[in-house]
Length: 237
Image (cartoon, rainbow, N blue to C red):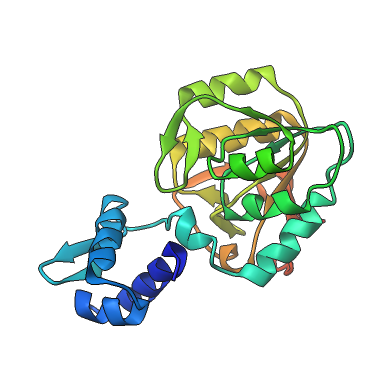
């Protein structure tokens, strides 16, 4: 069982139980107790869980799951969204590809020729190299939970680019709160990308609607939403 699957099991068990014991996780994940402890240490480092002697509980302050977990959620829906998004890319364009699992899923479906991709997504790099896509990585610091590059350097470097289209992740979409995310620097970068783009798309599965996160980065009419559902009055693909 790969790490993504184990972490999903651990999070699901913690969400359904006040306390979960290591021995139960070993059985549920079909792995060794050493692997369980290693996973729990990494998850505690990301502030997803709180460990106690012999077990673990969910961290009540956790507000964002890392990409290693999110990449296993809503798979069929994200695949559909990824395909629709990739179809928007034309030959010879410069595009921005945000960090996150939804934009990551786009890469296998990108078939346009002679494009340049600018990205802050660390996991995205290996897939882009495999497809031999010209890629520019923005500078900055790495935010562990999202595996994204962000910060003042990232923000300032965007002045040097203009994008034919940008593809952005989103944490929350709400009629009153508008489009939100969890981190101030990531919000600032997303907002500036929208300003520097001819077209800006957000990729949103059903779990993102009617959800509010702490930091707003766009109004509903600033972007084009790619989603299988259309619950709000906004621009959709």
